[in-house]
Image 1 (cartoon, helix red, strand yellow):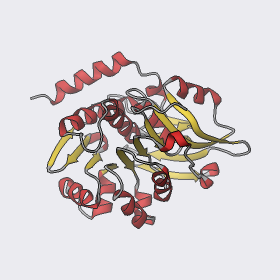
Image 2 (image 1 turned 180 degrees about the vertical axis):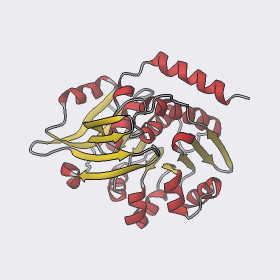
Image 3 (image 1 turned 135 degrees about the horizontal axis):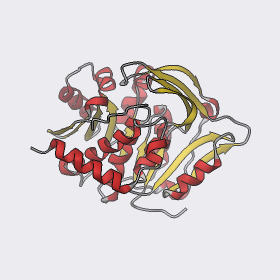
Length: 309
């Protein structure tokens, strides 16, 4: 595998999702935090993906990932295993999914091992998985110049110590505002961000669902609205694709922990919000897998027109 200084090494889940929302129902569409993140990030920069799937995972999708500049050498295919399967539903409140079933399958024994080139990655994004596994990946990377992570309420609840130790090791954290409240005990956005920064990350990105996203760096912040998508079918993966577009933008500009500015983050967050607005327009990653550059550019201009004064 050729090392690319402008690539992102990411580790997370690859899955099948069965989803019901007010817009309909689907069974076993592609899903997983790493899938959504990689698709979005690859719109801006190459990606190296670490994950695990069973022999039921479509080869056609792996080939599609490769066609998008996503290096799949780090995906382990377990011959007699089944891919992680999540079943969930959304009610009228599309900001919150109700988990109906989680079948970990091959993901239960996931043991990410990096190749020698992968250990030299400059940028690492730890998508939403067990913080112990996130630590395991960081322990193998030699000298990254930028580390970011995501997490969720489950890990805040059952592994808070491991997660807080992880936050000491990362530069950017991307979580939703409910998780920020759970982690810090405050609903006030800026106070929650300040408390999380005190745990380690220089940059805190708070995802706010239909209300957009907020980014905090030092004493500065930027609040971006969500693009008003008229046809929301499935919010699954919107936060992961937001993070993918945000990180892809930063990495495409050779930015590291010492050179990122608020202005850089503003544009990265705008890209994240725009990309997420496409994600919700269909079930699974179907919409963003066929997203064209001119569509993204057009919506970005519309979005910028919304927030300019």
